[in-house]
Length: 193
Ligand SMILES: Nc1nc2c(ncn2[C@@H]2O[C@H](COP(=O)(O)OP(=O)(O)O[C@H]3O[C@H](CO)[C@@H](O)[C@H](O)[C@@H]3O)[C@@H](O)[C@H]2O)c(=O)[nH]1
Ligand SMILES: [Mg+2]
Image (tube, rainbow, N blue to C red; front, side, top):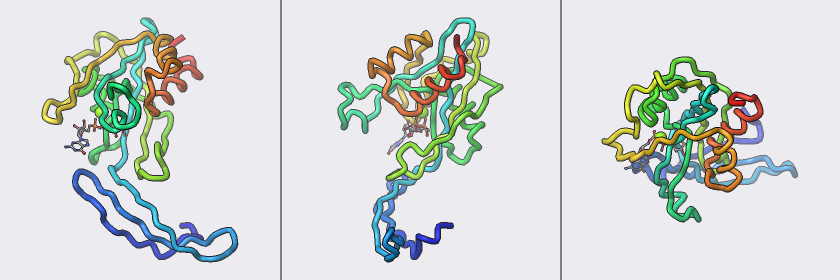
């Protein structure tokens, strides 16, 4: 509860795929005066993302896919290199992370660790992304990956040297927030030396 916030009203703007609301509320400002504010808030539920790494090979697993919103905002071909991730769809974050890893990369991982959680765009999007890490080996590959056909995901799976991935961040070839966070987490904690 925040005593500086009261009288929250919600006005539905769109519920086509997920839900966009206009929220009108009163906020007690620094001068002690209640003022009415409006904020649009996009609710897509929460998500999970997972970095798969291999200590022996010094590699990680990434995906590459077309992301329309990035194409609309400066990403030349709209392609985005990301860790495996997806929306929870009613699952616990751990369950979702394991499921997305297999659907998108083809690796069936068991021992995963939750390391961070973050609001990725707190001014506009309600989503919390839960961030995980897990070791993978070649033996864990059970399918091609590539995402679900019925969702037209068209995901390419990449196995990349860890230091090369860090260089890709520097060169801005990797520009996805959750992916940068997990790569830096791995670097700080020497997961792949
Ligand atoms: N028709 C339609 N389909 C959609 C829409 N939005 C998403 N989809 C479909 O739903 C799939 C969702 O796949 P997920 O793997 O669950 O999600 P994601 O898009 O990969 O990842 C999301 O979650 C991450 C973790 O929270 C986020 O970091 C990432 O930005 C993204 O929002 C997409 O691939 C796409 O096929 C939409 O507006 N319309
Ligand atoms: Mg996904």
